Length: 370
Length: 197
Image 1 (spheres, helix red, strand yellow):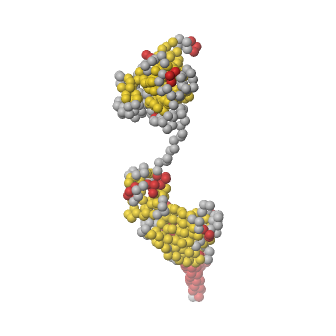
Image 2 (cartoon, one colour; image 1 turned 90 degrees about the vertical axis):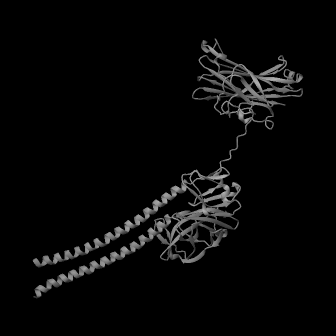
Image 3 (tube, chains in turn blue, purple; image 1 turned 60 degrees about the vertical axis):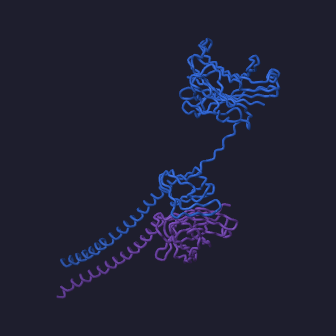
């Protein structure tokens, strides 16, 4: 019985020794291998991830004279391909630090349009077209709608506009640079530049410049003074209504000869309201002979209407035109028969509920004479 | 006396047998472990090399008769490394490709302003391994493979010119980068390109 036990014990002990040896040697070996491979791969992924982040952070732009790096990483230009198919390699690479720029001459070229591709050290390939600001082709503007005052800067080639009066939007403090069409002198009134001479404008009220439609073009004439209002009975539901009435006269603005056949006036009046109420607006343009006030023609304006709901108050924008077919209509031909300078008067009448303040302005007036 | 010797002999024989079997198993385990170690080492080496390498098409010029691909190679550690480049044509894009047909090309590298011919090596395809969809390395089995030896030196631009007559209308050109480990070539990276008709 004892002998059998001893034999069994020896086998078990022997087996245990072998199994223990296997476990002691093989398992740490395998564990070591697994750890090593995992460490190598993890390190590789970490480095690659960092590289890819830097690579895709690279960005280049150009203002045609410089290559600019607006990105968050330094960029090194390895080589450039030129449009003629040649290749320029740089040794050392050309470095553009973060938010810095290099003149294009550093790349050995005189004109940015010579470049086809820029290659960076991180393997980014920039087509030169990606660097340049997009070319925006302005939409074709048809007269008279959709125009802004600064859009009409000449006219002979488009509308044959012989006179254009508009307020420039780049006012430098209280100083208006010579050459601009209209300006306001504090306490003295409005002036326009007519054939190189500053001429004071007669109008019924004067206020500081504003930009009612917020299009960054200052308006030429603004009326805000509440004393210019007339409050009368007769509004809707018996309420009082407020009427704003403004006459803006540009003296000696239009010269009519005995062969003048057609006069068109383009204009952009604006009406600002203090509430969301509607206003009723009437606009009329008159041409009156400067030295003989009895010779005068007038016509209501044909207007397009846009209401812009702004936070503080709505603004009603009108753009319109008035045509005087002088040669075609007997009533208008009086101008041909009385050549000379004519004053141009724009009448704006606006009517709203009495709790609504009305502001009125004129962004531009253009005259085309045929 | 005989009664005493017999258990000792039996025990000795049993212990001996156990030791022999144990050592055999241990040797087998060590051999197996070594094989695994080599495989793991190669895989890690290739994976590490692939992670450190980037290839991209910098420019392509297609003429009536040839396709020229200018392939940029970047070693992100800026390490001087020898790569082996080969080209195939396949009917599928990327890893979906099942059949790789060797493509004869002319390969040059750009150095100091000029393109210079790369050294061409003919390799038995059983020594060239590509990555299968399952992630295993499988031999190419295309007979022989032309590989071009490119010693990366911080610039990394290779031009590959292929005769268009060799390409079908739906074929993809595969540019494959390999690395040499112990005389065998392992795929690092590949990119696919199709000629726009």
